[in-house]
Length: 205
Image (cartoon, rainbow, N blue to C red; front, side, top):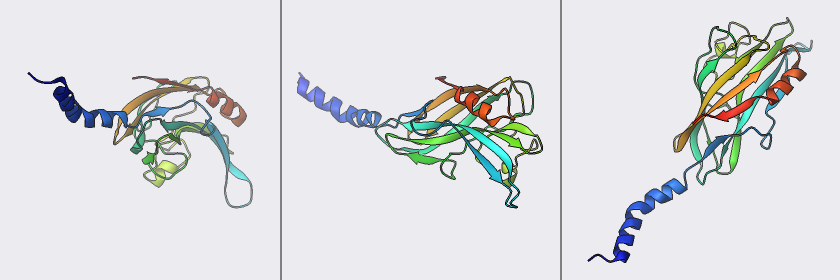
């Protein structure tokens, strides 16, 4: 007859490391809050010739938080799907760029958050306005702010943009979210900021 104490010791010996590993895993979440920084920001781009800004732009960004008990290593936010208000050329689907570091992946410590850029609204002096997906740039071509850029999402005022993202890390479960937003007047950055602040963020897994 096997003593209960012996059985308990075996369970702890076999399952203990698994339970400990599960308990200490990172827990990644996208947050719709400005506790870790503004969900939008704006910045004029100067041409360096002293003649004023050539480009006005603002971004939609979200904090990616690690609410687990272990640092999330190699954290990336990947675009898995883009739906434009009308049919058109779609940007590629790959990792987004982080808003505060020049990297496509990073480590998020426990109880910390990092901002990831989602989209960039650009208003050029020549009257060109539009939306760009904030993918991590692999070439200078990815940095071009024109409708010839591979990251161009068009100018569809009044329509709904939908972006699905997947938050991944080397040692964490993948989390998926849907982001939706509308832009009714891309020539007015004050209006854009208000509309980007009304973007919706919902978990889809």
